[in-house]
Image (tube, rainbow over all chains, first blue to last red):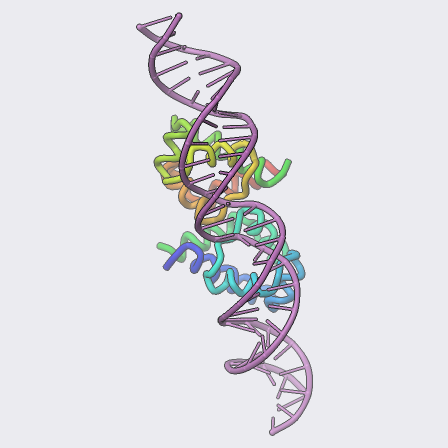
Length: 74
Length: 74
DNA sequence: CTTTTTTGAAGACTATAGTCCGTGGACTTA
DNA sequence: TAAGTCCACGGACTATAGTCTTCAAAAAAG
């Protein structure tokens, strides 16, 4: 499993936990809906700034998203 | 202070802690030496995969780099 | 069933991450 | 004087992050 696939899985879990649709999350962090879809499917490697943007509406610290990603990769 | 400036400062601290030159670190994580310089000066926003690549030779978990970045931003 | 919401996916595009070439300056050691 | 190391910085480039539009299909929900 690649880093981006693991991150995508983490993002999807956190998004669903907060009861966001992809479109709702996209609006909340000012990103495109199709891009959220791409990230969740492991097709994109977001920058650190995008990770910070995603973390905010998910009400989680950015580094926690990476920590969960690392745990999936073990 | 921007996210990328904070990350650059963290990267530089960790690199110096491990006694790497920019070029040494670049070779260790298969990146360009001028790109390491750009990151440290806050001129680039690395992807999550690049963060993972940088973390390895620095012998620190990727999420720790983000955690330290968040701490600098508070 | 029908209707609505949500998501996958393709294509064309713009912005920027990341590479590769170089120059020159600050600093050290010989 | 050099000669070596380290780094800031520029320019030109390639690869890919991220946008925008659209269509269709899965999946809820009524």
